[in-house]
Length: 100
Image 1 (tube, rainbow, N blue to C red):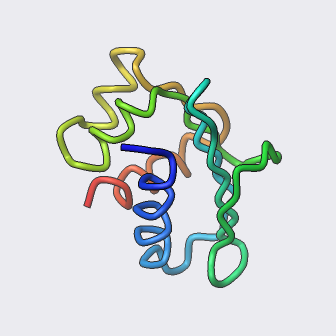
Image 2: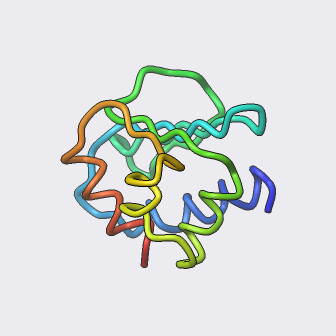
């Protein structure tokens, strides 16, 4: 799965995340990053390295597995495959959005 594929999936999931007003960064290391600003409608997606309320760091492969339902985000976090920086409360909300 490419960064463009992930961007399309995130765009779809964030469009259904009504009431979520946050800036989220997904950092995939050498594979790039994705910044989502859902403080505006529709959410703005870019590859900027802007300041975020919460940042998720993992490989693109791990994130693909989370989106496909093959990897539980909480388990990935406990195993060190997923790092979270910033608001843990917001991370838990996003967990539910990303898993469905």
